[in-house]
Each structure stands twice: as C-alpha cells, then as structure tokens.
Length: 370
Length: 218
Image 1: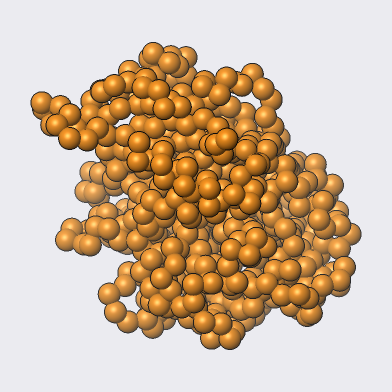
Image 2: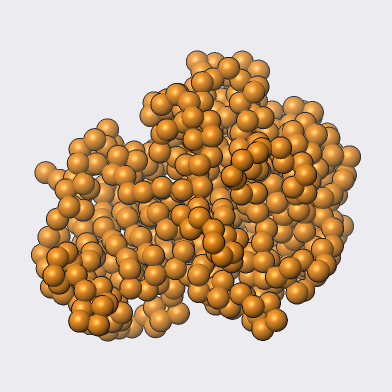
C-alpha cells in the first residue's frame, strides 16, 4: 500500500505542517488586505509569503525557493535517497514562474514549468524527468493520484509531490477581471459569500510503498472526472465532483469518513455545486469543511496543503472549523461548522474542482484497518 | 497490431518547404499516416481546417492558440475514429502533454496588463491561461466525463508519456484515452501528435513508447 512518509507546508502561517496545523486549529488566518502592490492597481485580500522566511540561496525564483525549501524540510524527516533514479518528482502548479513573462532580461526557459521543475529536482541531484501536473485548481490532488499510481505500478519506489504557486499581477488581475475575488476575507458556503481570496503556499508530501500502513497515513484511492460542461464555470448538477466521489466511495465506506475537505472557494457557484455533489454522493450527513478562510486559494498547493492539514486534523481527532462561515448559503443542507468539532473516525475525503471542468476526489485512511 | 488506434500529426515541414516566401512556417497534416494537407502556412491552416472539417462550433474562434490547434487535432482524430455518436460517459478520458504549457495565451494575456497605467486585463484571454482548458474543451465537445489531465514535461519524452498513459488506466472506469503531445509556442509555431489508445496498453508502455517515437519521426 501507499503510505505517507513525510510532509511540509510553507505558508504565512508557518514553515512546517505542525506550525500550520496549530495556527489553523487556533483560528488564525493569513489573509489580509494588500494595497499599492506594483502591477495590481486594485487592492486585494490575499495570503502572501514574506520572502524573508525563504532560506534557499542561489539563482532561484520565489516559486522555486518555496518548492525547494518545502521539499528539503520534508525529506529531512525520512530516510530516502532523493537523488536515486527510483524517486519520482511531481510538481503541482498552475502558473509556476509566469511572473518572469513581465520581466526583461530573464532566462526565458524558466518561464516553462517543466524547466522550473527540473531546476527543483536537480537541486536534490535527482536527474529523472520530473512531471508537472498542470490541471488548474485540482493539480495538487491529481499529482497525488499520479504518485499513487506510479507507486502501485512499481514505476518508482518513492514519490515527492510538491505543490506551489506564487501570486503575481498576472494571476491577481486575471481573477479580478473574472469578478471572482472577494474584497474581504472569503466566506466559504456562507449565504453572504462574495468570492475567493488568493493565497501563496508550498506543500510537500512524500509517498512510499509499504507492506502495511501501521500507524501511518495511507492514500487509499483517487479519481478525476470532467463535468463536460463549461471551461470556467462549475456544473449545475455537480456532475464531475459527484462522479469522482462515487468512484472513491467504492473503496471507502461513508461511515468511516470523518469529513469531506471540500474545495469551498467561497465563489457563489463553486460552493453551491459542491453541496449538490456531496448530497448526490450520499454524504449529506458527513461534516464538510473548507480551509480557504485561513489561506485563500493557494492554487497548485491547495490539493496538497489541504490534504496534509486534514491528516493532522484526524490525528488530533478534530474536524477543523470553516473560518468565515456563519449561515449556510447553499441549497443542500451539508454539515458545515465555523468551529472545530471532535471526531473519532480515521479517514477523510479530499474534494476539489477547477477550470477546464475538472474535478478530483481522493480518500485517505490512517492505519491499515478500517 | 498497433497500440495507437488512430492518430493525427500536425507538424512543420522540413527543408526548403519549411517556410513560405514571406517567412511563415509551413505545416503538414496527416491522419493515420495519410496526408490531409500537404503544405499550408501556419497562420491560416487552423481556420481553414475548421471551415472545411467542422464549421458549426463557433466557440473555436474564442479559443487561444493552444486550444485551437489541440481542438482541431481532436476533431480530425475523432472523425477518423468514426464513433462520434457513442455515449462515452466516464469510459473515455483526455490526457495531454507538452513543454510550453499555456505560454502562447500567457503572453497574450500579459500584454493586456504590461502597462499598469492603461492596463485592461482581459477575462476572455485569462480563462485560457491554463493548458488543461484544452482537455476541458475536448471533453465538453464530446461529452466525455472521464479523467482529464494535462502534464507538462521539460521536453518531449515518449517513455514518460507512455508511463503516464499506462498509469491513467489504473482508473477502472477508463476504457480509452485521447492523448498525445500538443505543444504551442505561439500562433504560428506548434507541434501535435494526438492519438487514441485503449486499455490494452496496460503492461505495454515500452512498446507504446516505441510507437509514439516512430510516429513523431514520420
């Protein structure tokens, strides 16, 4: 089976997963107002990483430094030779070094995500071909699904999955032009939600293959489905998310699921769509939460970051509260709560959806037995 | 018996015919090895193909350069397959690869925000600044509910592509996959090998890699 061997999260709330988990559990948020940022005339609410916390030196961009530091921190926790040809690097990102497009005199190749990924892998002396999963907002879950498959098929012995995105005028003005951003802290699933906030983070998970899970986290399964509906709007029937959940629920029983860690971006349509999908999948009584009120939408990092915090939450018998939520504002009565709740279950489902009509769900279980 | 069931190749001609007199790249289009377009300049090729072979999907004109070339390749490929009426549901997915991600549209969007004094960010350009919008466009057009994914590699590599294709079939619902390489540097510089594979690629990624290699060298 495929088990988690190590992890890390770098965000404005901390530089380890533990620091991040404790901050979120205490209800802290990294979201705040940003004004006068060059290239972004309209003020915006976001969670941005101060470069002073990044310790990697050399000719690396902010994106690459975040990834390298996160991977380095994770692999310190496990005894694997990351330079080995049996270690697969998978980078999850939507825009990587896109901000290089706006600068003159830069090394042009680095704007290509594959070239940036190679730079990151080569920092660790890994010469294998790195993969960049670029599947919009679901990249972080997709990348973990690719890791699971590569390990199950024996194509590698270890997979290092790192998700990250850096906010830039490119991304912020783009989301502003789509009228998808909220001018205040986002309110997932709330009736007064006004849109999403953007965020920066890097998150790493290292998976390996073991005969037994023992007391470790097991990645049980995952599925990716398309809505076949619209490139930038979710399906009104929650089709892709429902189908992804249905596939995952063939491998895990709803009664063992502590919660569904939803995408919960706090846009009108996303949260409504997820409530439909959760209801259709028969999970209406299962606690549902979103972590966007703490970090905003961290794009390529989101699927990894939210998976890791969910693992730490289950370890701590906790369903993390959905910051910003007050009154249910979706048409199906899903079980969302602003405050932390107690759970004694050992599994959870990560659900996520994105542009291009893509949706993913994955199930994780602590220990080997149900 | 080949693992690649049908394929479309759109690539620049080599040698003396590689450019038009005015310096535009010349392309050739082949389907299952048969020539559809012997030579055509990059700047008009895709709209001409669209008018001749599709014609009734005006969304094509809203698409960015990557989606135009990838969409057009998928139309030719799926017409060659001749199963367009079938209800595929979750049994078919779309997984594509390239090295340039959505660079062509990224540049076009960046141009709308370059000067922050006069910046007028274009939402219609911004939505295409993700390569997986192409896999979404193909799923929408053909009502595919299966897995869609986009993987960016440092460079073309048939071994890695074959491995990921085989990995995708770990999804037991999946029976066939529209897949391949769709690289688009800008409006006049692109390179496509798109093909269909079925579940029988499982366990044969070395052979599949060889087939892909041969097809790109044709």
